[in-house]
Amino acid sequence: MDNYISTHEATIRLGVFFGIFALMAMWELLAPRRVLTQPKSARWLNNIGLVVLNIVVVRLIFPTAAVGVAAYAGERQWGLFNQLDTPGWLAIVATVILLDGVIYLQHVMFHAVPAFWRLHRVHHADLDFDVTTGSRFHPLEILLSMLIKFAAIVLLGPPLVAVILFEVLLNATSMFNHSNVRLPLGLDRIIRLLIVTPDMHRVHHSHLAYETNSNFGFNLSIWDRLLGTYRAQPEDGHTGMTIGIDTFRDSAQCIPLPRLLMMPFTGVVTDYAINSRRREPPDES
Ligand SMILES: [Zn+2]
Ligand SMILES: [Zn+2]
Image 1 (cartoon, rainbow, N blue to C red):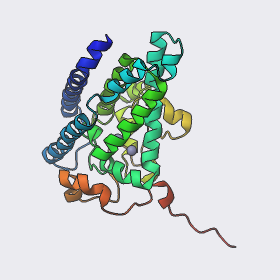
Image 2 (image 1 turned 90 degrees about the vertical axis):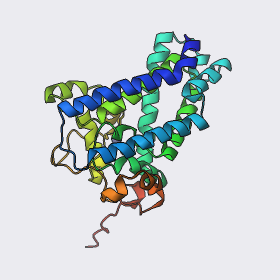
Image 3 (image 1 turned 120 degrees about the vertical axis):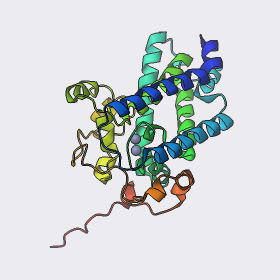
Image 4 (image 1 turned 90 degrees about the horizontal axis):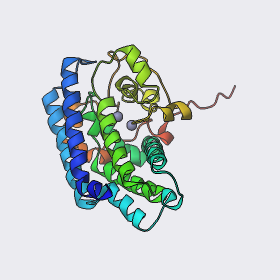
């Protein structure tokens, strides 16, 4: 099993990626939630161009990926689950939940720290919200998040199957919860008890800073509820809200791939990041 996962890691992940992508893209055509504000062909060409670039960069720099790190830790008996005599199923469930918690905390950090926000705002500067937004990240953010994930894997010492399961789940749920799809509201309420839905994550893509800084979960919705960052709906409604960030509103800045790659190094950090928030001076009277 471990051997199969190690040798077929890329095929499994790409297969699931294309399958879920095609499914969500079709669903968006049949039952869209919002009317897109930008030409879809231009956004998709550049967003998908960024995805392809990221796949190449990650494969070049980290050819063995997260599964390789888990195998390495396993051979040396590093990490919690390699040290404890945990039943396999428990180690798998715990790994998926704990890695999801790490990704949640990492996401909060990418919003709070000004230099990291410069990277992460490439994701947020998309002027529309659809399945391609789910994979639109600056290569430096991808590389940093890989390193954080590798560190978590070394500490956890998880089974290989748990790591590939987590990667596939994260990728699939990210495409699902960024999709411009209409779900019946009753169904949305049930699903979001456990999993982040498109309506829940769309709040996070509002241009209003207090909405952007909520709903950080990518997969499980429990972290936002437990840790106090949950916001149920956008103030202006799902069809009336403005998607994106106030720093970059011009489509000439927010769509072309070269501009996305340069985005972290241009513009100022506004009050989305933690220490850039302006407060009214205290009232002296
Ligand atoms: Zn974010
Ligand atoms: Zn997002």
